[in-house]
Amino acid sequence: MLSLHQRSILLSDVHLCEERPAQVDRFIALLDGPAREADSLFILGDLFEYWVGDDDCSAALPQRVMGALSAVSISGCKTYFICGNRDFLIGKGFCIQAGMTCLDDPCVVDIQGTPTILMHGDLLCTDDTAYLAFRDQVRNPLWQQQFLAQPLAVRHEMARGATAESGKAKQAKTEEIMDVTETAVSAVFQQFGANRLIHGHTHRPGHHQHQVAGQVRERWVLPDWYGLGGYVVVTPDKIEEIRFSE
Image 1: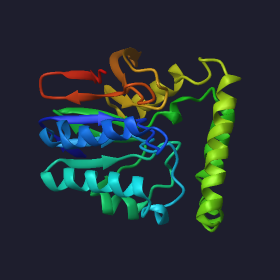
Image 2: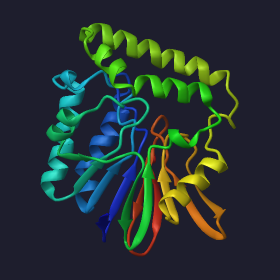
Image 3: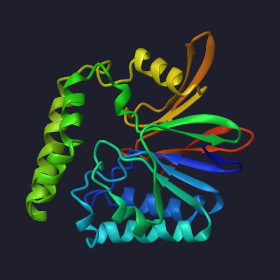
């Protein structure tokens, strides 16, 4: 089990894209500042609004992000990444250039002596059966092989179309369907035997407590960056959510 003992930063759902330069600037500022003071940085998915393959790494935005992430790694802050529902095609090529270590979703790490489950969070939304069916489709190696065989321009067009369709689909769903289910949360806690879970995806930041198998377990939901954004800092003394200000 990966073990960490001092200062860890965890974030997710940054959704970087050329159309939102302020988000990119905030992320780079985080890497150039607070991340340099941490021992570890965890990015729990959806770093990008969408990702069409590691052969697109030469574009301006990926180059800037990879350079900043690599500099953080060189500075001594170990950086880890879990794929999200928007950037599930990020592969070894990007991670190597960015100096990141890919982790399984879900996984367990020891943070200041507390086994902690880390995951993107979409697997916890078990009432959203339409999304889970789509997730199974796009995680299929054959589907990915066929998609990555398309020209880059075609892939970008398809990804933009899928993002737009996702937005429309969300408008037709209830808030409850798109949130985690108690059953899924309890199952993950029991599967890994941990008392802490940290995830993103739902865009509903908060700190929750769950009664599972007679024990109180805690669940932290990371803030998304569609607004000002933020992250969570874990130290030996506490867990603290940090929000950006104007």
